Amino acid sequence: MRRVVCPGSFDPVTNGHIDIIGRTARQYDEVVAAVLTNVHKKGLFTVEEKVAMLRECTADLDNVRVAQFNGLLVDFCRENGISAIIRSLRSVSDFDYELQIAQMNYRLSGVETLFMTANPQYSFLSSSLVREIAQYGGDVSSLVTPNVEQRLRDKYA
Ligand code: PNS
Image (cartoon, rainbow, N blue to C red; front, side):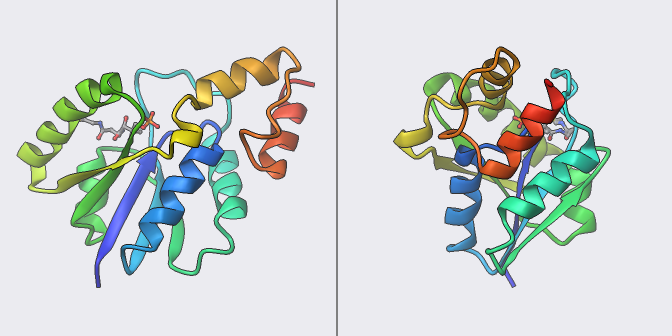
């Protein structure tokens, strides 16, 4: 059983995240989409809301399950028998940041990080931009799924 994790803060999950999770699900037996805390980011949605949105967005993917964890990603991997972390790269600046984290996670636990290049269709997309656009009433319908769009509308109503 090849089980991997797609971790993130998913605040909220975007079409770019769903693309990566779906492509990962075609490569591995089981994918855990895991909501963790990024200490450098201030959250909009609660963990419960993020998990609910992810479940809605991945409902049609049989080998994807959604989880949440409060702690180190490598501890989540150890507790769940996960041998690899999948991270998306949209740009060289993503790589600069991700390389250090990947090497630290490997040093801490031996868990590998595998990078998947973002679909060019979504290489400009980030949750923070989606939040900003939604906050000012902009159109995010091509960036997130309808359920997420509705939750953003409710949040900023
Ligand atoms: O979507 P993000 O914000 O890029 O996801 C980053 C995330 C949540 C995966 C990362 O911050 C994380 O792994 N948080 C859990 C704590 C941890 O393990 N930090 C890394 C220490 S080397």
